[in-house]
Amino acid sequence: MWTRALLKDNAKRALRSSYWRAFGVCFVLALLGVSVGSGVNLQAAYSAAGSAGGSGDVWTGNNVPEATVRSVLAGVPGFVWAFLGGAVFIGAVLTLCWNIFMTAPLQVGMCRYFMENRQSAAPFATVWTVFRTPYLNVVKVQLLVTLKVMLGMVLFIVPGVYWAFCYRMVPYLLAENPYLTPGRAMELSRQMMEGEKWRSYVLNLSFIGWYLLGSLLLGVGVLFVNPYCQATFAELYAALRAKAFALGLTDANELGGFVRYDPNP
Image (cartoon, rainbow, N blue to C red; front, top):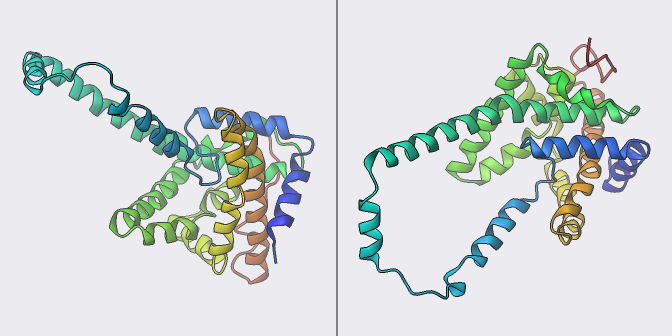
């Protein structure tokens, strides 16, 4: 039976000699768009603050008549609107492709890095090993899980949140065995999270204080919390993996462990 204190103590021990490398991993992945937080949506808070700061209360000039605005917009040539619309569409497509083919697989690579780092200081290049064969299977599984969670969010929200916690272990499972089929990865994650979803949620909440403290320094402090957070989640997977083995849900033929291998053969 795992406890939050035990997971966090183990995470601190794993980071004792590799914190700054882990920090570098989290920092680079955050720049690439990979979510490395604890589930706390700080970006939404920043957006809300920005919206408040840009409200009409700070406008000191004269109001522009609506007729003037319409006349200005009417004077914009049609090809300009077509160009802007095309640019927005292309930008949306590129962002979608980036998230599918880069961000989602890199999340799996990050999971592998922190699982290997539990044993000894893992090389930075471990993150990129996800782009080896079977890279496309990792993309497919991550995409299907994301689509299912998004569907639940769109329909009633609650199913989406429930499924998000059910399939929380999928990136770790793919990090250990990238050949898992979508159905098997989701099934095994769901079995591992049986009876653990609420405790996992509370584990998420336990990092809020750290993130609020980090956000006081213009958000920079949050970057220093991320390695601790990810190392703790790796400990959670290790605990649930041991539970799955004990219950006979899987075995060493399916999950062979995180044996170190050369990331640049």
